[in-house]
Image (cartoon, rainbow, N blue to C red; front, side, top):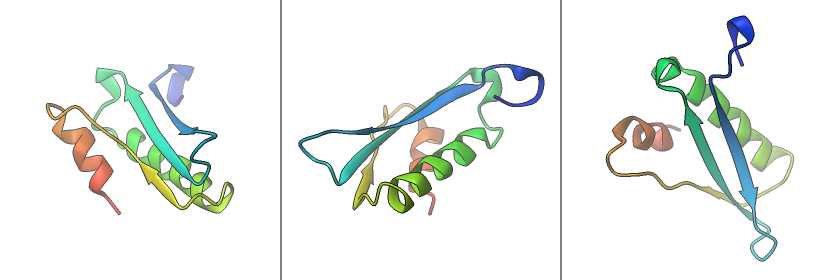
Amino acid sequence: MKAGGALAGDCGLLVIRTTPKIGEIGYTFAREYQHSGLATEAARAVIDFAFDSLELNRVIATTDGRTAPSGALMERP
């Protein structure tokens, strides 16, 4: 959530019991909030939590090939 309390989207982390040191990040954002930097902010926070607090070894993500901005987000350091 940002200004006005509107739900912009969500970002989460899935850690499967059988692969406890690997997490998978996922996110969705409403069209009107895309390209606003919110996805980057959310993804960085979740990834930091995964490595710093949960001590995961790896975080993975997949995307639909038709969503180039999502793929670009995944490639950011």
